[in-house]
Image 1 (spheres, rainbow, N blue to C red):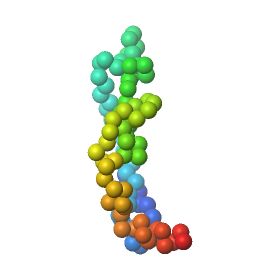
Image 2 (tube, rainbow, N blue to C red; image 1 turned 120 degrees about the vertical axis):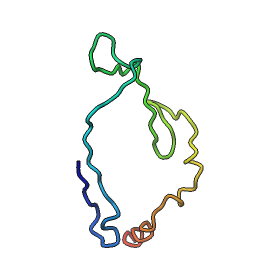
Image 3 (cartoon, rainbow, N blue to C red; image 1 turned 135 degrees about the vertical axis):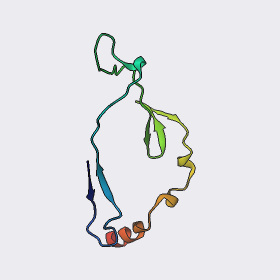
Length: 89
């Protein structure tokens, strides 16, 4: 629907965007639909997989090992991290 610039620093301007979207259609596996209800997902049947801090979780504890979690975190840092730390100190 739209993009919104983030950051006032000239070095960041145009590099960081917040993207606003509109969901037009959702597809769900029949197996997770609520019995007797149209267009409702049964939360007892749905088991989402969520990535949090480079690890895979379900609705509880960690589920799977993650290949991205084996990559040193420093490799994910953008060049502006050093600049941000200078401002903080």
